[in-house]
Amino acid sequence: MKRALMEACDRKILLVDHTKFQRRGLYQLAPVTAFDLVIVDAGISRSQLDTMQAGGAEVLVADPE
Image (cartoon, rainbow, N blue to C red; front, side):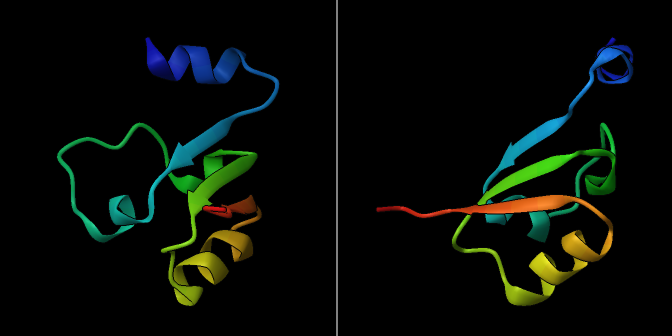
């Protein structure tokens, strides 16, 4: 169902905190590159940020202030 909803969307936005990139999960809805915009907190590492941007996603780092 979630994949079908993603396919029907014009724009896909992922809101996630940096700790989610350091874990392995049993289920992955979609790779980060499937999203048009990724919003992540300032705890993200430079290498993780570079990887997402190299994949073509627009990345917005949320400023805690």
